[in-house]
Image (cartoon, rainbow, N blue to C red):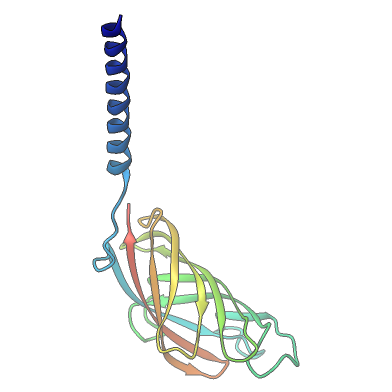
Length: 187
């Protein structure tokens, strides 16, 4: 009788360990390791923004839809919609490789700070699809990192970092930002 119980116990334990081994191998096999030093894709682009001022309808690529007066010197509460060209070089008139479509708003009363949410829309022979980017742009910092939170087409479910460096700033009329995009998760 004791031998029968020992055999049942052995079978149960053996089955349990096989099950644990099977599931642990499945979980470990499905994990994707990310090497933050080696992105799977890397791009550098220039983001050009010309704010509508009432006289530049033909050239404007963005418009303030809300700009409450009297909230301080840092544009707090200003909300801007944009459809900006993205180029490979600093020249605004270069052939766009994508369009940045989205919005930003100023969200700090004591300093210049904006929160961006936009989609890079690619439709060229080189790339097709979108990259979705969002995050805080701490404008007084020399470099700022925003999150790449997804994408479609050539960038299906991509994740990574878009580093901003202000290249030129001409008051409220025009700014150009260099975007260094590193994708660490590519499918």
